[in-house]
Amino acid sequence: MLAPCDGTIAKVVDGLPDMPVPVMDPGNRAGNYLAVDCERFFVILAHLKQGSIRVQTGDKVESGQPLGEMGNSGNSSEPHLHVHAQRGLPEAAPLGGEPLALTINGVFPVRNDRIHIK
Image 1 (cartoon, helix red, strand yellow):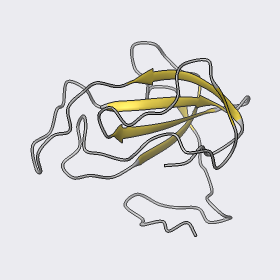
Image 2 (tube, helix red, strand yellow):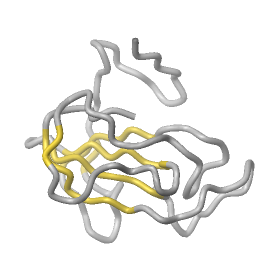
Image 3 (cartoon, one colour):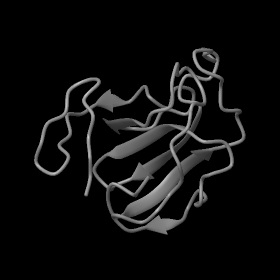
C-alpha cells in the first residue's frame, strides 16, 4: 500500500490481529490503520496487516511511498484496503470526519470497485 499524497502521518494504529475469514471485529471498525494529513483533508487507510505499517505518527511521506500492507484487521470479513477521504480526524471516531469524494487516476470509484494501479 502506497501513500496517496504528500503529507504527514497524523495517526497510526497497529497491533490488532488479522481476523480469520469471515470473522469480524466490530469493536475495532478500522482495525489497524493510518491517517495521512494531506493538508486540506485526511486519507485513512484501514484494515492493514498487523505489524506491517512502516511509518510513525509525525513522519513526512511522499506520494507513492510504501506505507504498509493490506490485511484483515478490524470490522472486515475478508482482506481488503479501505480508503477513506475526509475533513477532520475525530479522536474517538477515526472515520467520523466529513466524508469527501475522491478520484484515483482520474476515476471516481464507487463502493466495492476493484482498483488496479500499475
